[in-house]
Every structure is written in structure tokens, then in C-alpha cells.
Length: 479
Ligand SMILES: O=C(O)C1=C[C@@H](OP(=O)(O)O)[C@@H](O)[C@H](O)C1
Ligand SMILES: C=C(OP(=O)(O)O)C(=O)O
Image (spheres, rainbow, N blue to C red):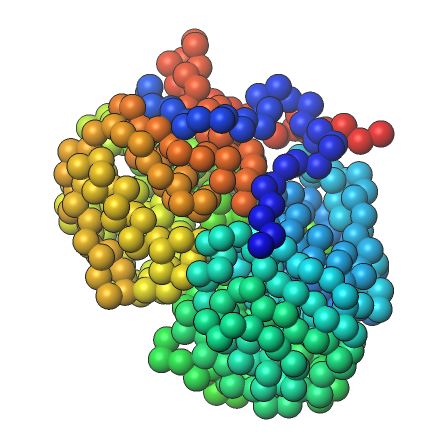
């Protein structure tokens, strides 16, 4: 089995001592908020956009430049997977505050490789259809828990397209396939009820199939629709039109995928714990570089945090969430009743807030979170329960009864969003320790440092204020 831990590339993108990456050996004591926040920060690039643009760049008819991409374990794994298939991906100096740009030069795709998917859904779902266009065998495996994530839809779809796949019948990693160098395409049925990524994966490569693709989703539910919209938008920007004549059906004509220069937006879902912190500690948190228009589901945070009682304001490219007095200052958080099927990746942060609210909450439409980095419904219920909370698993979600919480060890299950949910609780509850905070490197290696800055009291004002990334404070240390 391939098991890799993420380690930052040799370059040090940060000229700011506040952003030294922390990788504690033992549990990480979650900082307690000591007063209302007045924080301002930038967030590294979107995982979902970076990994889509890497895939599309590898399939394109010319070179691409990804500006300010995310540098994290999931994107490093994607870059490595595409390199394994022959793509040239180089780091080049750029303007981004969190690492270099990526120049991608597509090459003929070649097999004869092993792909480490880590725990990255985007790698395990997006890369196999690309490998179908390579000539030769390609093996896929990942972390121990990755072997529990649903992959049957990928395996079945590859076979339906005529690709030879060898697996053990469990519908998970590991499996291997034999790419024939070309795929005819045509009609394809996919049950994407367990993950929208099964749809995105085949749409991303479909223009390279000889006959294009008509893909029909057959399952009863389809989660994370904005992520499919994101796939369609990234394709459109490269000249590939995806049409949809009926709900759950998409058509892609064969044709070239254009190389392009693209600015990667900040990861708005990774902004969730930072914005949520304003409701817990009180005061304001401002995220810089918030896009005016985006397909990222994190854009819904303005509305979703409003349900708990926050107010939001946009000034230029800043989004500010104002948590008023916050839980710690004595204001109450409203309980919520929410169908979150569109934005399941926001659930851990929202569940943490719900556990600190004044009334009960129900978050539904997220049964598919059982197939995420861990079974997030079970993990959230267990970890909040262990701190004195009362969280009940529903068929497709969670019911949360706020209770007084106490400190304790919060397990991360190798899941970045479990770790950051624990950090939200730790703002308000003494002695919360996060087991394996390093797992945040999956999408945000800077999390521990950014979080510490967030809650660091500002001596003079008695509030915290961080501004490490504005006005070019972070230059690249690349010569
Ligand atoms: O396509 C993508 O980039 C993603 C789609 C969603 O997956 P699911 O549909 O499996 O929830 C989301 O939760 C995940 O974080 C990223
Ligand atoms: C579900 C997630 O990730 P993945 O891309 O591994 O599916 C997530 O980041 O919340």
C-alpha cells in the first residue's frame, strides 16, 4: 500500500515568521479565544479549482500557467499523479503569497506507473479517466482510509467505456487498469449519489474521447451540485461546452481543450473555520481576495453564517463576517435547520457552530459524508459526544443538541475538516487538544499558523488583528 505524508516543497514561500509551518509530534492544544477578533487574512488557493486546472492543463492542446495554485498534500498528489502519466509540471515564481505558480506542459500520456491518491477524492476520482487515455497499465492506491472511500462508480464507468480494470470486487482502491491510449466514449451511465466527483471526473476528460460523451446520472440523489457547475465552468473557460438537455444528463462534444493562464481563487471552503471564529469569539474576521463571482460553494458562507446570526459585508474584494459579541461575549447563536446537500464540505465547521448554539439544529442532505475522508457523521457525533455534546446521526445528516462542553482529546481521523472543526470548539472550550493537526496539510498546511495568528491578542487594543498577507508582506523566496 502506498502511504505518503505531505511535506512542503524545499522552497520557503514565506518571508513572514508568523507563518512557519507547525508540525507538532503530539496533540495540538487548540488556542482559546481571549477576546473579540479583528482579524484580516488571505487564504491559499482552492483545492477544487487547482486540481481541476491541473487535470485540464494535462489534457490541453498547449501549455498552461496556474497562478497562485494551492500547495497542499492533495494538490501535490495530483501534480505527482499527472507527472507519473508523463505531464511536465514545473514550479515558476509568481505573485501568490502561498507558493510558486505552476507551468504545465502537456505531453503524450503514458502508462506503466503507480498513482498514490493519498486520501484525495479528486485524485482517486479524476485521474483514472485521464489514465484511460494513456497507453499501458496504471495502478491506483492510497492511504488506509482511502481504501474505504467509494470507487465503484469509477470502476464500473471505466469498464463500460471498454477499459480493462482489475480490482478485488469491493468497489474501492486499490485497483489497476490498462489504458488503451484512446477511448471511444459515447453513452455512459454513472451513479453519482455517493459523490459528485464521479460526474466531474468524466466530464473533465470527455472532450478527449473520440465521440465525446453523453453522461447520465442514475442515482436517487446528486450531492454537491456547485462542484459540477465548477467543472462545467472550468471547461467552458478552455473552450469546451457542456450542454445539459435534462437534469442529471450532460453532453460533451469531442474537441480540443485549450491551454490557458488562470488565476486560482482562494479556497472559500477553507475560509469557513476562520469566518466561523467570529461567531464564537465575537468581533470581525475579514477574508481578502473574496471573488465577486465564483462557482465555489464556500460563497454560500455569507448566507449560511447569517442563519446563525452573523452579519456579512462586502467591500471590494474583502468579505467581513461580524459575529457581534460572539458566544464568548454572551450573544446567542441560533440553532439551524438546513439541507446542506449542495455544500457537504462545509458541514464540519457548521456542525461545530451548531454545537455552540442556543437551540437544537438539524443538518440534512449529507448522507454522502459517510464516504468522505472519514465517516464524518459518525466522527462528529463521536467527538462532540466525548466532550459532553449530544449529536445524533440521522439517515442523511445530524441532529445537534447544544450542551455544556468540556475539554478533551479531539480525534481527527486523518480528516482536515475534522481537525479544523475541533479548533472551532477549542476557541470556546478550555483544554481541547487536537490529535494530528498536521492532517490539515491535506488542503491547508498553513492552518495551525494562521489559526494561532487569528486568536493572538493584540496587546494595545485587546483585540486580535492579523494582516500577514496584504500589501505584499509575503514575497516568494525564489530567486
Ligand atoms: O469536485 C470537487 O472538487 C469536490 C466535490 C465534493 O465532493 P462530494 O460530492 O463527494 O461531496 C466536495 O465535497 C469535495 O471536497 C471536493
Ligand atoms: C470531501 C473532501 O475532500 P475530497 O476532495 O478528498 O473528497 C473535503 O475536502 O471536504
